Image (cartoon, rainbow, N blue to C red; front, side, top):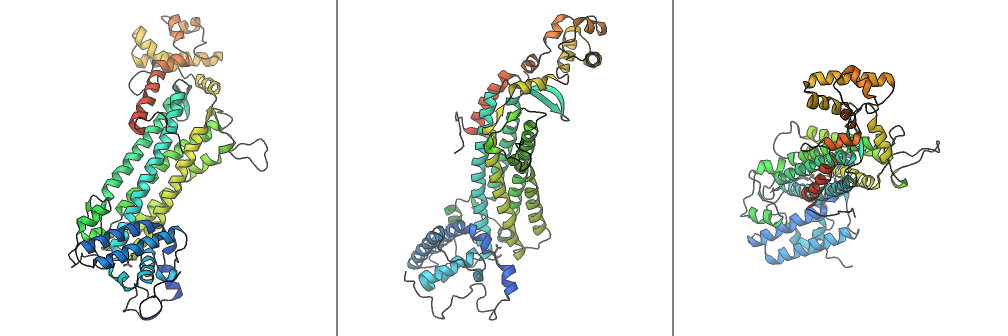
Length: 479
Ligand code: ARG
C-alpha cells in the first residue's frame, strides 16, 4: 500500500509536545503518561466526535469543504484499519486522540492538522467518554432486560410453587417461588430506571468548550450536539471539560445493580446446597471439585456474589480521583477510564452469567414444599384465624398461637397435625375449621392483598411484569 508522505520534516511529530517542548520525554514519563492501551476502546466514539466536529467546521466555513472531505475520508479509513486490527497503535502518541490524529496526518497530509481547530483534547475526551458511557448504558439496559425476561419466564412457571419465605433467614411464612423471583424483576426494573436517569443527565455535548474557556472561532455547538444525538450543548465550558459525575453516577448504578445480582447469587448458592436442596443447576453452570468426586459447586453464582467488590472499588476509586480537583481539566482525570471500563465489563459478565443460571434452574418442588412446612410457617395464619373468627385482639391471638406452637413442638408435630383436642386445651373455642387453613397451599392462597404471594396474583403479576418491562413480549429468550 502506498502511503501519502508525512509533510516535510520526516518523522511524525508528537502533536501534544508541539513547538514548545524540544527535548524527549523520559522513558518513565512516557510510561506514566500513556493511556492508549486503555482508551483505544474509545476509538469509535472518538471518530464519531471528530466527524461531527469536522462537518461543523465546514458548515461554518472554518475549514474548506475539500479539507473536510479529506479528513472525513481519512477518519473512515482509520476506523476500517482499527476494526481490521491493522491500525498502528503507538505509545509515543499517548492516547487514542493523538494516535488517530497522527495517523490522519500520515494518511491525508497537512489537512489533518485542521481537524483540531476550535477543539482541545479536553472537550474531545469529555465527549468521547460520555458517548462511550451512553453506549454502555444502552447495552446494559438490553442485558438487564434479558435477565428480567428469564426471571419472568421462571416466575410464570412457578406462580404456585410453594417455598418457605424467610426473615432473618428463619422460616417465616410460605411464599411462592414465582413471587420470590418477581421481587428481583422489580429491583432490576429500578436498576434500569437508574441507568436511564444517568443517561438523561449525561447527554449534554461538551464539544466546543475547548480546553476550558470556549473558542474564538464561530462554531455551532448545537450542530455538533445534534449530530451526536446529544440533547443539547453543555452550558458552561469549565464544567463541560471537568465534570465526571456522569461517570460516577454510572458507577453507582453498576454498584447497586451488582449488589442486587450478588443477593440473588447468594440465594442460588443457598438453594443449591444440600441442606436446602431447592434447585438444581446443570453441568453447564456448576463445576466439580478436584478432590471430592461428589461435589457440584455453584462457582458462577459465587463469583457473581463476589464481584460486587469491584463495583464498590471502581466507585471509590473515581470518587477519590475527583475529590479536591480544582477546575478545570487535570491529568488526574485520565484515571476515569479504568474504573468505568472495569465496572461495565464486570456488570455485563455478571448479568450474562445470572441470565444463564436463571434459565438453567430446575426446581425441586417437593423439597421446597417440605421446607415450607417446617418451622411452623403457618402460625400467622392461625393467629389471623383466631382474630377473624373468635374476635380476639391480634396481640392476644399472637399469644395463644405461641402457646399452640409450643405444644406442637412438645408433641413433635406440625401445627396442621396438632390434634383438635390439644388445641382446645389452650383455646376451647377453636374448631376443626381452624386446622384446615394451616396447610402451606391455603396459606399462600390467602395472601391476596395487593402485591401479595397468592398464586393467582403471582401469575397475573408475571403477565403485568412482561408488559411493564419487556414491552409485552411473550417470550424474550436470551440470544
Ligand atoms: N488522554 C487524556 C485523558 O483521557 C486526554 C485529555 C488530555 N488533555 C490534556 N490537556 N493533556 O484525560
